[in-house]
Amino acid sequence: MIEEIIFAGFGGQGILLGGGLIAQAAMKDGLWATWFPSYGPEMRGGTCNCLVACSDDEIGSPIFNVYDTALIMNLPSLEKFGPMVHPGGLLMVNSSLIRVEKPRSDVRLVEVPVNDLAREAGSDRAANVVMVGAFCAVRSIVRPETVADVLREKFASKGPKVIDLNLRALEFGRRAVEGVTV
View 1 (cartoon, rainbow, N blue to C red):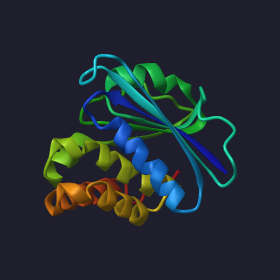
View 2 (cartoon, rainbow, N blue to C red):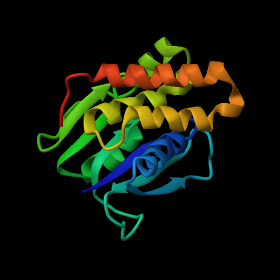
View 3 (tube, rainbow, N blue to C red):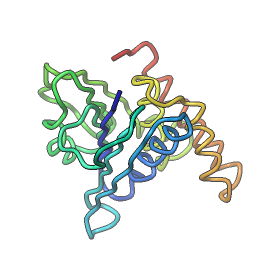
């Protein structure tokens, strides 16, 4: 099994952190994982994406051009990377910011209002974690419990409020897609 994922949006949406959470959780769950970031020079507001591969065998390359799953946080990223999800793949979009006018019929589309859910969880800044929670629930590549452990480690220096906020966001993402299977 290998899952090749792109997590894409604009700088400031926590794209690299979100992809890193998936990769680190995959390693903790005993999988091989790669994480390959890409971002423009603009920083906040510029383009940003990362490639994450998770496999039960060694991974030949951290770079790939067709995706099993695309986690898309904004419209420019949907326009750029949406067509590169292979037929039968998964396209998860942030429906708080994106309205999919003409969905592809050859991929599974899951719309998640990640910004709205993050706000409900306590902060817009947790939208990336909401998307990770939704991904964990739909794809079952990494366990949400493992992502929660990684979150606790990553935010330990930020204190319990930040940890609790992110754990809530993870759970809101998971609950948003309960019953959705791919």
